[in-house]
Image (cartoon, rainbow, N blue to C red; front, side):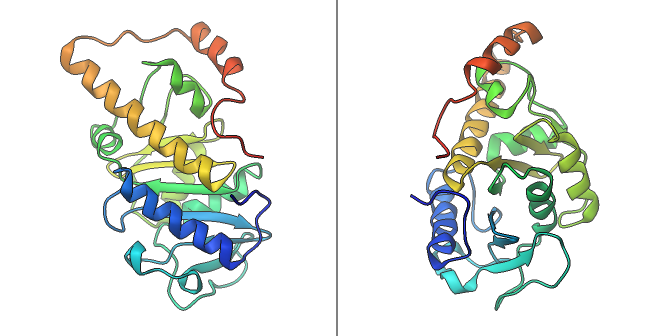
Length: 221
């Protein structure tokens, strides 16, 4: 298991590919609609655009400078979503991975333009009493990157209007874990609404949970 800080090595690139394949295996992504990046020194390594994960090899991934000063390097263009990956890694130096996909239940809520309220205490895994919704903007645009970073200032995950979901991770493994947890949360919230009216936990109740889950889940070191 790779531990941050990461370097741009074949092992890191293969770990990104493996995380993409695992994302599809777990049913939290379909086809090539998702994308994953990792901080590697002063650069970002990210999946290329539109290539099936099972065809990827480490040399096919793209690399961009984190300061945005310079072109992408690699035989294929980076994911069309590279802007918000780069923006999140710049805004959150403690995070080393960004995982984006279109999980069905997260996407359904995003189509309804709804955030996820404090329907379950596990919402605290994302840093507060909601999983917020980023405003709609064209995929791959600077405006979308700005919207995502704005709502994730104090969060490690968000929904993206009429689009999907994105999370940050202290490691690649934790990013994948967090996205799966987000999809489970979205599914439970939708299901609870089909059988009644969900009871939403209070801000005080979530504040108690925030302290308790500070070191919950897969360890980053």
